[in-house]
Image 1 (cartoon, helix red, strand yellow):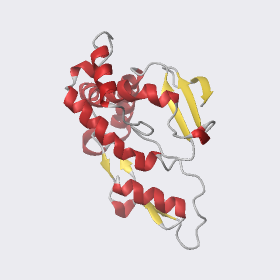
Image 2 (spheres, one colour):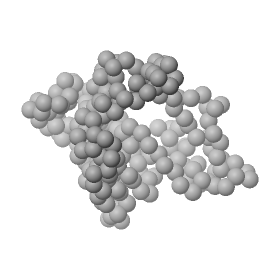
Image 3 (cartoon, rainbow, N blue to C red):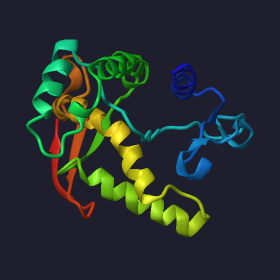
Image 4 (spheres, rainbow, N blue to C red):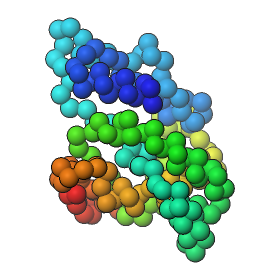
Length: 197
């Protein structure tokens, strides 16, 4: 989060900064940050200043919930066939929820937000399986199908916990209307509906 705060602050100020990069194929598909010596430098003297930043990633836009809401969602998950929350210890879910508060340092810097929202969140399993198969073909490295399922099982509870709140709007305050676009996509990744929040 320290790196994220420094990076976004530099971009907003138009000062020189390197863009952190991530390689999903590193470590047999487990992924890792690319060495900083390979990061692209922007806003250098003589370069045009960055005007638009598109930031994409897991947990972007998620905001922590009240502890009681986490408990309620975990208890309710037992009745849902595809749910994974009930498989995780409550103290672990509460730990992740609390750590998510640190993401506000980035989220609060956003001027607009585009939420690409799966019609059914379980699509993320198939999409990650496809991605890893592509990485294995193209780079000769990537997770096996079994590793993908285990990997997605680890972060899927975040979708169950935080997606509902994200769908209602990531921004706080009264001047937030019209700053979030929710694109609902089907299994084929095509947009089925667009909602301005």
